[in-house]
Image (cartoon, rainbow, N blue to C red; front, top):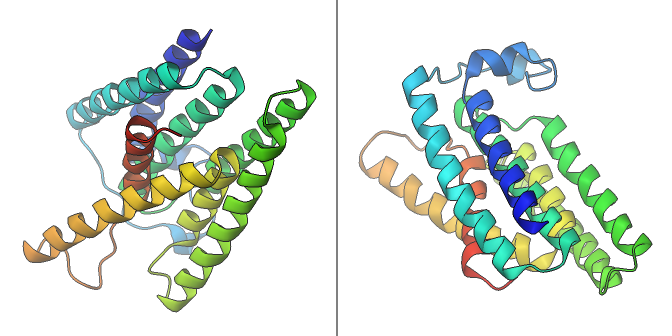
Length: 227
């Protein structure tokens, strides 16, 4: 069963990447497109060849993460939570890369799935279900409050889309997942930003999309840490 879940997640990651790296398809989709004119910025138009290449690379790293999850997580519900998070973070990272925003529908889907799977844990008598619920609520509230304060203090240097996504991930995965993901993603983003500034490809006034780093940070967390 775990292998089937993992295979399905990898296929979903490929489909999500192939769809959401295409800015025209994103803007034609009523669920993914920006709701307000002020959110509409000049997106990155990738060539079909580059979309295919990135989709294959994303699928490859997703497959490695899914394989690691099936090897370390033996509880079907916990495995399903982790794989759902992988797919949605993949989709969010792709949209953020081309449009510098994270669609609310994807964040809401992650939060809804978290609530459903946590509830399923109670109904099915999952061992540790109460602990997973406490950890998820604690991670969601703390990360949401802290990052919202950081967003306000940094004059929206941290986007509210990122804040909502991280809070939803905390609800789904708990303290260790969200903590590890933040650690790796912030570290990688800091190095990438420094490199872009040094090479003068970005200025201090230009933002770097955080969604792709959250996706990579999550993969590193589930691949390297015993969560």
